Length: 124
Image (tube, rainbow, N blue to C red; front, top):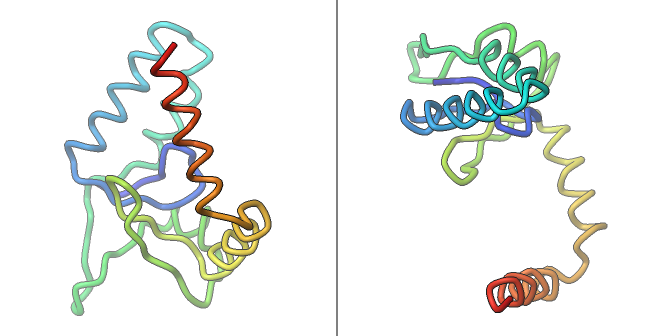
C-alpha cells in the first residue's frame, strides 16, 4: 500500500497488514469520537493499493501523492521509518535535518531525558 504516514507529512509505503492496523485504529477512534473521522477520511483518500513499478523496478507514486508532497522536486529521499518506507522531497529532508539540529543539539542527552521520563512513569 502506498499513501501517507500517520502524521500526514510524507508519502509512506506500507506492508498491507501495517496499513490495515492503522486504518482499524483510525476507524475505532472515529467510532468513539466523530472529530477523528477527518483523519480517517484523509488517510483513506490518499491510500492506493494498486502499487505499480516501472521497467527499472522503481515504485510509481500516484499523481495525487506526488502533487501533495513532491510537487516539482528535483530529487527525493527514501528512508525506513519504523514500519514503513518514507518518501519526501530532498528539500523537505534538508529542512528536517536543519530543524532537528537546532532542536536537538545534544542527541544523547535528549534520548536520556526521554528514557528517564519513561522510567519515572513506569514507577508511578
